[in-house]
Image 1 (cartoon, rainbow, N blue to C red):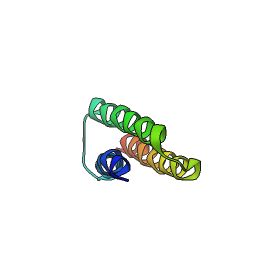
Image 2 (tube, rainbow, N blue to C red):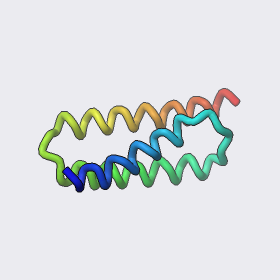
Image 3 (cartoon, rainbow, N blue to C red):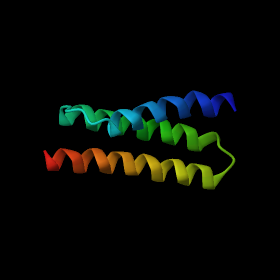
Length: 74
């Protein structure tokens, strides 16, 4: 449980940063997406639930897509 929190909380913070309506350099969005992907892979390596991992990946993917779409709108 502690290992999931150790990877899950930073992942949630990165997703929140991607969803924040702030102007950021594209490179920062890419760095956040890469860091989140690494945390997601770490989280997937020790979770017992494939459904939990899939849901976390889906939600993080949505955050990355929103950040990308927001950049194209500006």
